[in-house]
Image (cartoon, rainbow, N blue to C red; front, side, top):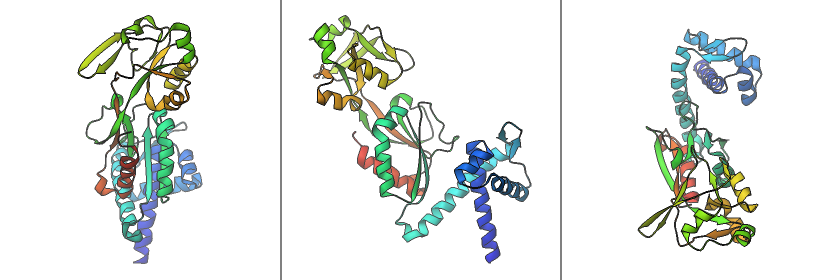
Amino acid sequence: MIQNELIEFDLFNSLRIFIRIAHEGSFRRASERLGIAPSSVTKELKKLEEHLGASLFFRTTRKISLTEEGKIFLSDAKSIISSLEEAEQNIHQRGAVARGHLRITAPAILGQRMLSGLVAEFQKENPYIDVELVLTDRVIDIVEEGFDISFRTSFGLNDSGLFQKNLGEISRVVCASPEYLDKFGNPKRITDLEKHNSLVFIRGTALTSWRFNKGKKELNVPINGNYKTNNLLALIEAVKGGLGIANIPRYLVEDEIESGELVSLFNSYRLPAYSVFLLYHQKRSQSRKLDRFISFFEKNLSGL
């Protein structure tokens, strides 16, 4: 009986090491992440391959990659580890404490300015959940790349077959610096924007007009300007520097508007908002750590 338990434990450990090697694409990086010697990683993988009677990786002097058998086994191994972690979790204090590891990804600016502080608060409330937060503007396949959860805006929402939770909308504001308005005048009508230097955020292609709503009325206003960027922080610095007028997510400039460093324009009009979603591939009922995380953000971020 004891021997069988040890065998199961060794297999469990070997599976975790195999999954980490696959995610990192390197024996060295896997050993660093796991906090064990590279020789131990190699030894555990060898034992697992001998147990299975199959090679799981192609190995060269430069890199490693999964064999066809390795790709198939990786999916099964993840399910096994997830099930074992949940079984272990259910035992501890009859499931009162959520445990395990969560890999989370989010767009860089959203993560830096809105989410990172909340993730830290979540971990304070759930100290037995290890969190890995990866911020990137690259659209990630969360299943293929081993993530549990992804924050996405509606602009980057193109996944099918994933569970989705809409956390709310992010509003936008047109603003400028007092310096710019003193020099070039405060636009009184929304059509006056055509006479001003409008700074443009590039998402794919640069916008040539801004769309406004007032009640049931919709208006597309052509814009002109000499500055375009694909980085919102760079756009905000340009506006604060007096370069022109910009259309910016409100949460990024709330402090500047409140302090008077920036001035909000056309407040009777509404710019199209965009939504923030949580994407995940496992049912909440099957993962206490996932359910705990989603519930936290439903409470602290819904409505934005």
